[in-house]
Length: 102
Image (tube, rainbow, N blue to C red; front, top):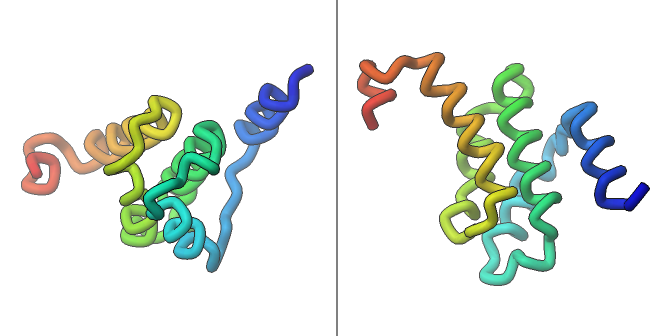
């Protein structure tokens, strides 16, 4: 079994809460060259963040500060969990609300 597949399989089983490291990891991702952090790892971080925020273990403002690197990320792998997370939020708030329309 290839290492990447094994990593992905393990990653899907549980979300990791990096506690006080979210800001430090976010700073590393907001550098001009974050490509040294593989796509799959960036996707795992985004996915973990949204799942932890959904469960109340990570404040949404910390998550949104963390994922600002996505403005410069063109990888499908990074954006896929972000889009899923935003869609979940949109369903919760409703499209007709002021938040849903912004």
